[in-house]
Image 1 (cartoon, rainbow, N blue to C red):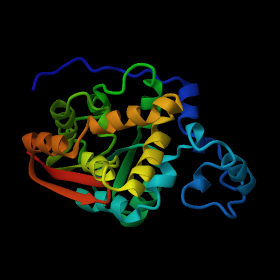
Image 2: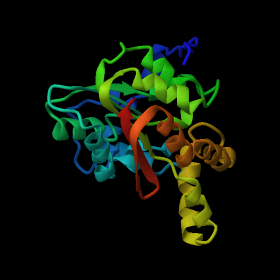
Image 3: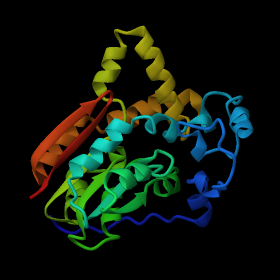
Length: 264
């Protein structure tokens, strides 16, 4: 594949700080009553109570509340990476600290050097530009070829073209190393099942609206976020992965999935 110019995202200090509010929290604060991701966003139980008195949508979206309890799923990404002690792993994800991914890595693979790449400043800087761009190619340009034993990457719905995007990540992996692609968003089948299940439809509408309201007005949020997630169906991820990886595996869990394989 030929080299293409890499799009560069300009991240101001203001965007960097606002995209990661947990950076402003005092680690010595009283955490009594805070759990399930809340301890990564609030200074106290009183601040959390005030926050939850706000309307449901808009500022009340938190990746941490959704993903932190999914310990088994988050652990599986590291297990599938199969990095041996002394190896290096690149971890590309959103809200790395609040979702507990770094804590899981420290516990599960303590002898592996995990290099975290926080996605949120990039997506926040590009909110007014486009939902899809060459995000992985941009990230890959930050590192040397074959610098890592494995790469774990999520946020595929921001990729503009799967094959060159995934290929760019494989260039960072040593021969025989693994690429692990993590998909957190609801799949097309979830929306289809919701047409037959009123309770699922109700829950799905709340969650999808909840997520989309970070970006657009609440009345537009459901369709915006649904389109965003359905633009990257699992089948497309698997098909692209099979073009650039050997031994491709797919593991589906609830509405989430992990696709992994060995660099060719």
